[in-house]
Image (cartoon, rainbow, N blue to C red; front, side, top):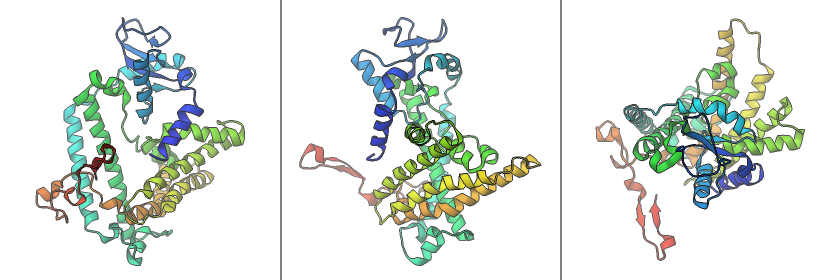
Length: 380
């Protein structure tokens, strides 16, 4: 949060004119209060409207909290000509349907079981325990152009743990806001247009390689906050933010900012982490994208061969560079943290964790009463 909040403030207060340009999609009644400049309703019978910043304090506060809390900003228009663009998009957004609670619960259970299985593998592997000895470092955190089989298997395990954790969190958010609380309590966050799948179309990796992996398939939770500073740097260095050179500067800047954010997270880990390694991992990603672009084969025939090459290079580059990230998280003991309060496999007798079925018991989770109220809180 120490790194995220300054970036968010820079984005909203200095690099954008939110009161002038921003608007959010809301559900309104035909006779709802508010000026005509505040609401622009699409169609005669539509209940969806793009709401500019309100004048009344309470509605303005809700508007601002929504803006700050919307990580991806899917129900926000952030450009100066949003009134014209919004008309085209409102109907498409309204057609989005709420995923059924049954489907979401099934997805959640499968994700939790899969995560528990991978965590059981990690708990049985000393190389994920935060040990810095040479043997484990060579198996997990060392950089090599030809990763060994055991290192590859560990990197894949770490990757799928991160992937499943994001999927589970996204599913929980959907269940909470769409089905448990609903729009009557959460406003725009209770409508399906505020959400999108955590990950994109997997086939984009074959079409665009490493650039497609990071730019379209991997989660875009930080994009709304990273793009404006990256564009500002591109304009400062190149005079615009749309040319080829400017796009390259934007990409490099965004990865460096993302690396700084993740390095700050590494600083908070329990063990002796090396935040610079996490930063280097993200700093190397634009290098791989530029290498792939330099050796791109636009006329490859058949097209399937080009997709195989793109996908193969993406997997290779991630395997070569990810030991920086995974090894740092291992040193910081991140892989040993438990997001779930109990182990499903341990309950069934299929896994032996050191803490048994209750995974939070060994971490002292509970409420701490300090001498003053501001010294009290949840202990983790």
